[in-house]
Amino acid sequence: MSDTLLRQLKMLELVPRTPRKTTLAELEQRLHERGFTSTRRTLERDILQLSRIFPLVGDEHKPRGWCWTSEAKALELPAMDVRTALTFGMIERFLANLLPRSTYDSLQQHFDRAREILRQASHNGMNSWMDKVAVVPPGLPLLAPKLDPEVMGILSEGLLQEQQVKISYLKRGATEPQSYQISPLGLVWFGHLNYLVGAFPGRDYVVRLPVNRISTAELTEQPLEWPEPYTGLQDYLDSGVFNYRSSDRTLKLKLRTDADTAAHLQEVRLSEQQVIHSEGNSWLVEAEVRDLQQLRWWLRGYGSSVEVLEPEFLREELRQEARRVLALYQPEFP
Image (tube, rainbow, N blue to C red):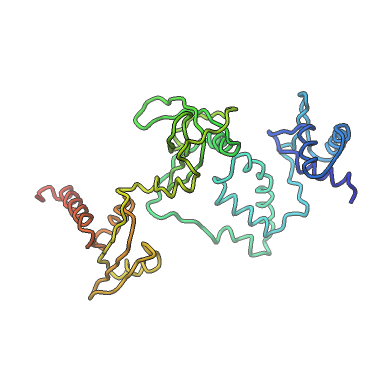
């Protein structure tokens, strides 16, 4: 294969899909980084020639910006097979929200092509694989708040480009949104809510804002500012910020449960140190767990199927709560 053909194929890969564009100067730099050396005039001749064959368009600006048209089909070398189509289908269904908006948009042609291939693959069991797998969240299926795709796109670009973002954010209880500038540090999907993890310029603490309360977002030219104590998203999550800690202590939990609950906990353990043994008609479960509000929510969900034996303060806490609940349904209860 000639160097000219290789260079032109690489050019086709480097030209983005509308609305993003690239100039000849940018193409020259990116081709040079990949080992292709050529003059600007040669590249201009190449792209004009390619635009007569492929759906490439150039604008009227100076310097001229080039892009694939929105109707252009993905250039596949080699062509997408059924297994690759299935992979793209799974990405679109389950991971789309984790991709930067620009990345998702650039993959849209591949998603479209994948759906077409899977529809045509009637002879292959893979075409029905998407109907045979599912992700079911635990708990009550609440309706997630609607998110503005434009806002999500700007936030993900700020995160990707490491640039600050101007947002309009409605605080809980407020009637009008306020304007803020924030350094986006991460996006977290927590249950039914999406959170922006970020920091305000000049502040040494990290905030987490529900994305559904952000009505507008605008990318700025200012680089990210990292607050002093922040060492990365995973360390931030490991600190327990989404776990609603009641305290920093570890509890030695002892429960009395029925057989069904004990069988469930054999499969999904409370901790590595969990021990379960029978006691007459019931089962005793012992485990070391963190003192979290989620632990209390979990215990309430089991109702009378789980009795807390230890620690005593947690048993008393749940006993008092049970009395208050009973008083709601039996007002005569003392």
